[in-house]
Each structure stands twice: as structure tokens, then as C-alpha cells.
Image (cartoon, rainbow, N blue to C red; front, side):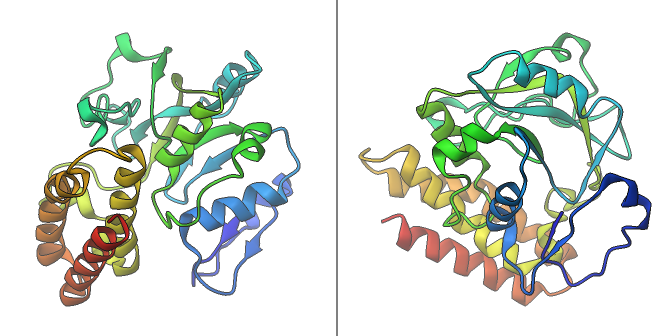
Length: 264
């Protein structure tokens, strides 16, 4: 477990797992933390699980069987359900939308659909949790730490470019311990308490768009317009729910400006 938080966790209940607790002196954010974790591990497969994910009986074994089934299967994500509402889908898979300016969040906020479960689905990103073959990680040198927070889409694309399969397997389940839809601003619950993350989420998106659309005309302008689809509603949520409204809005603007500048 790679830990860059300020909170001291109680690991007593995990003592039988031979858990290695890597406590960092300062915050390094998601991409760097994942690289530290997999490079310390010695197993053939690495299961990345975010700190707000909860595992169950169908989290580990089903997805391991899929990855072992093909030597070119590089990474597989499980289906993600809301922890407090396991009848409700957080996401089944995340393939690109048309023009690759966003992702189709398959099943998002709908009741579970038996026709979509126990299947391999196309995906272009690996949010929340994913099982990745060590050889695949080594082949692409892991996560790109220049994408401080949102590097899973970039990793998936680099794996595919090297010939690795990247899939979603909806026969495996992980549970996302986040707020369910309903209350105003539920979609930005993470960011409303974390101004630093808000900055990098906005910036990372522009950098990813630059990579996906390298050489295309007007990509910068298109990205600026498209980004308003998440910048504006998230900013509204920060105003309504954030404890540090001024700091959150400042972080949004800084991340937006950094992204526009760096993607130029």
C-alpha cells in the first residue's frame, strides 16, 4: 500500500495479508504513487485499487482468470458499482466517444444490466481499479507522471500501441465508496475537498487531448470548448459544496490555464 496521506491508517485487520505499507513523506498524487507501488512489487500481475474502492468476493479471482487466459492481455478493469448502492452502476467500461474528445461511461448511474455483465467490453481507460500484467507495465515504463492525476487513459493507449489487449471484464466487481447521484454537486465530491487534485485534473485533460489529437487542426480550440462540459458544472459544485470555495475556483483556473499553455 502506497500512502501519501496525512492520516495514519489502522492496518491491524490486514496483518494476515503481509501488507507492505509504503509511507511517503509528502504527497505525490496518483500516477507517481502507482509507479512506486508496482516497482516495489514482485508479482507477475499488479492489481491497482484506489483508496476509495472496496473489494468483494468477485473482485480478484474472475479478473485474474481473464488476464491469464491470453499472453497478450495486458490490462483488465472490473465493473464498478456504488458501494452504498450495489444495484447501481458507477461504470462498466470506458470506451471513447466519437472524435475521442471524451469517454462513454457505459452504464453510468443506471441499474445493473444483466446483458452487459460477465462479458468483455471495449475500454480506453482504466479508472478506479485494474489488473495489469507486469511485463506490460515494463514495456511502457508504467504510468506517465507528467499526468499527475489522470494517467489511466494514457496508459491504456500506450499499452494498445505496443500490441497489448486492454479490456473491461464485467464478471468482476469492485465497489466505489463515493456519493450516489441525487444531491446537488454529487459528481464533484472528490474535488470539493481537494483543491490540489482539482488543479491537476483540469491540466491533465488538456495534455491528454494534445496527445490523442496530435497534428490535428484547431485541436487546442476544440479542447478549450469541450473542457467547459466538466469545468463549468464542477465549478458550480465547488461553489455550492466546497469548504474552500475561493481556493477551489483558483485551482480550477490555474489548472485550466496551465493545460491550455502546455498543450499549445
